[in-house]
Image (tube, rainbow, N blue to C red; front, side, top):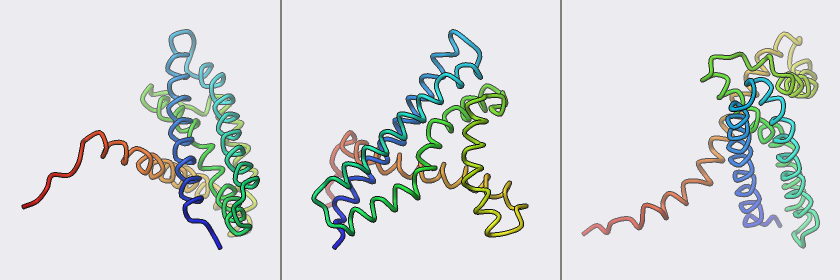
Length: 175
């Protein structure tokens, strides 16, 4: 038996980590701009953001594995963590990409971004080789960015929407 309540709680925590990773990395980079260049700020903030994001994901998985949930629930949590790890790690990186976009700078000059892209490439390239000739890698990287951004956006909406509903108050009664 799989506990949907436990999965919902873990996915809510995933959403919170995605939003926190995006906002904290963005805030750190913007604060760093007061003291240094964008690429230097990104190179200082992104490794820390990626580490904290990975630790948060790992803590959630370990907590689920150590819980008294059924084996099926623990296996689904492990499977979801594997599938959603890269989109979650994209959160701090996407904050740097957004800031670089608005600053009209190329994020590719950041060493931390380049290292992240190389690391993801090591995961995605074998997949593109398996699916096609390897000419698909550019498409796979673009698809990764879009899917990760969509997953993050949906996670953010899922986490923020209930708070907004509480803030706006109850629905008006219809007569």
